[in-house]
Image 1 (cartoon, one colour):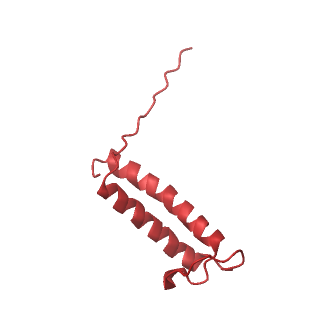
Image 2 (cartoon, helix red, strand yellow):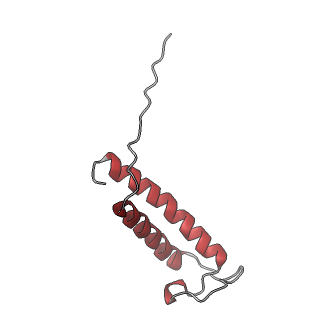
Image 3 (tube, helix red, strand yellow):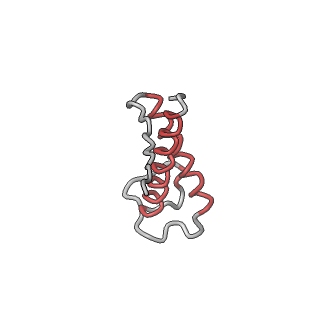
Length: 87
């Protein structure tokens, strides 16, 4: 029995200022979520430099976790907007 496999190809957007804005917005959104969602902030190593008030209590682990989540969201947003023809 023959099975056909449909391969969906994603349209990727070339790097532009619009792509950068979407990625920055996704990271800021993820940091805002992390600011309210992380219950025990600052348990790990502290940041080596002084950061804005938005990062109050954030250590290296919190910043890496929220930025990683932001990049995952951003990649999804960029791919989705590119496939919809909006980016």
